[in-house]
Length: 79
Image (cartoon, rainbow, N blue to C red; front, top):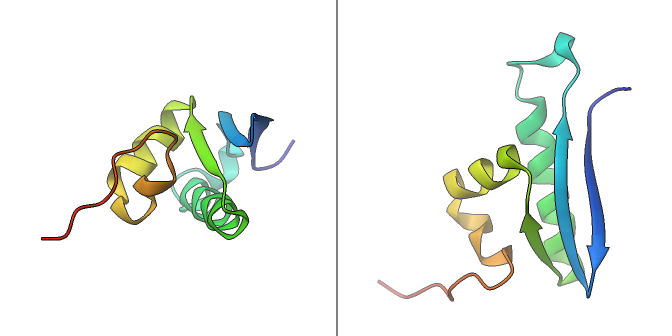
């Protein structure tokens, strides 16, 4: 099946349901590359994301530069 993110759109948001990485690619950063590509695309579209997928939620939690894309995320504050 290959490497992919299963998502859908609802009310203008992208809902991430599942991230699949082929066993041969595990541990090589493929999941992170998929996440980054998808989130950069969402940023360019001006939409938001609902990370139902545990991998995507965890990845976004570890990458604060993408946390503003999460639907209903708090606005970033200046330090």
